[in-house]
Amino acid sequence: MIEPPVLVIYAHPLPRHSRINRPLAAALARLPGVTMHDLYARYADYDIDVVAEQRALAMANTVVFQFPVRWYSVPPLLKLWIDEVLEMGWAYGPGGTALRGKSLLVVASAGGSADAYSPQGSHGHEIERFLLPLEQTARLCGMDWLEPLLLLDANAADAATLAGHIDRVSACLGGHARVPGKEAVHESA
Ligand SMILES: Cc1cc2nc3c(=O)[nH]c(=O)nc-3n(C[C@H](O)[C@H](O)[C@H](O)COP(=O)(O)O)c2cc1C
Image 1 (tube, rainbow, N blue to C red):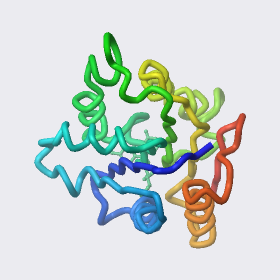
Image 2 (tube, rainbow, N blue to C red):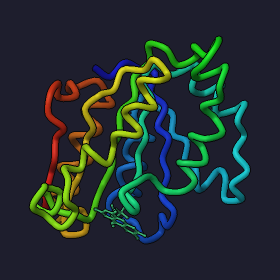
Image 3 (cartoon, rainbow, N blue to C red):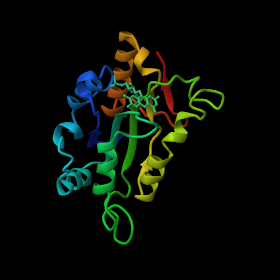
């Protein structure tokens, strides 16, 4: 369940070339109760303001990681953000309780299709397997892991598929719809 306030941590290394995440981030930024942190716009020099990021996290009930999948993982600046912002003694470890009880939602796009993300497919595993480090990061920090909202086959998405994805994610973050409980939702073009 998405509980406001929501903090979206958005990372796209080449936003000008983005068909999916750029318009999605723009739509989410307009929602009431949503704060958008565009990491590549804020920290082009990779010099992350850890105190400011921790302050924003402390005020949120739901944290969203929005990104295009890159080499089965998150873009490098989001990985650096995780490394630096989720400090021991703050996010985890002794005294590290700042994120406890909050929720983490992954909103990601991937070029691979649902067929490719299967044991028989070219990526060899379900896409959820590649999100396991993020899921365990959330759990280590005492956060609830929400079922990810994923757009597969993203580069083949037509305008209607893209609009539907933006509507669905906006409805979830805007409090008009529940994040599905069991299965991650895959949309394919
Ligand atoms: C360097 C690079 C690595 C990528 N790695 C993957 C990958 O591991 N798995 C995948 O399904 N798609 C991969 N893609 C495709 C992107 O995820 C896809 O183009 C993106 O989600 C589309 O969203 P956008 O229009 O916002 O850029 C990669 C793309 C680039 C440029």
